[in-house]
Image 1 (cartoon, rainbow, N blue to C red):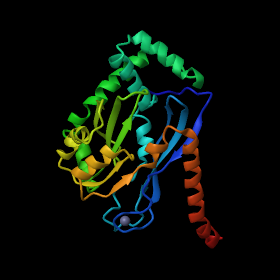
Image 2 (image 1 turned 90 degrees about the vertical axis):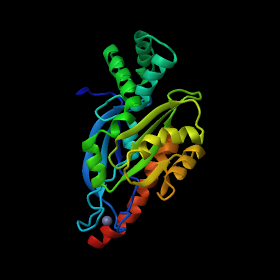
Image 3 (image 1 turned 180 degrees about the vertical axis):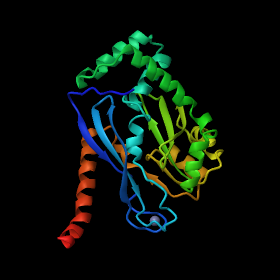
Image 4 (image 1 turned 120 degrees about the vertical axis):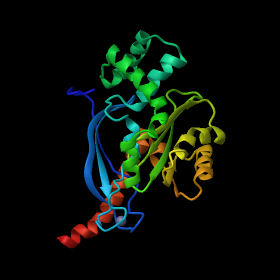
Length: 275
Ligand SMILES: [Zn+2]
């Protein structure tokens, strides 16, 4: 879906990885490329984003080939999609969970997106529903994706990121498991219980890939923590700020500001020295 449209209300955002330094040699990671530059429509805002990839600056380092990504940027939307993941999940939920017709889903989405002055076509609803079905199938496909497996090998392994999203208030959650290094979806499942056993079942196909797990990332939810710790006790674990902050735009803004302040503090002495 290529959109050359312009949207009246756009928030501009820049995303970088959570990692600050290379885990192999501890040098500060540097911005190496723009991974994507795109527009994403969420239920709250239209975002014009730049997603920056970072790398270890030392060409001799074993970790130099690895590009670090922002899990927050990857979580916003599936690759190639303008409508965000939350909208894909909502379409799936309305269609399958609430048994709404395509026309009813279309009506509801038009209403939900109206404050953003965004229009969505009926055809796009069909397309998003198809994306929802594909997403829930992904886990069976990762193990046959030779191109991706080769990339994961080159990276020395994967970083497993677990993200629980509630399309609507209630107890149904869609869990999306990604490799944070490539951004690829490894598993996705809609569950009504978030017990550790359910989490482990969700993560089982990831374990079966036979790829080294370099680290894990989850939000602060205990069952997620326990599941990744039981499955990959050796891998370092990180609690993701973005999971916690994602839905609160005010705090996200605060977090942005904090990152910027931290970056400025870090950069200022260097800039001064150069001057
Ligand atoms: Zn390094």
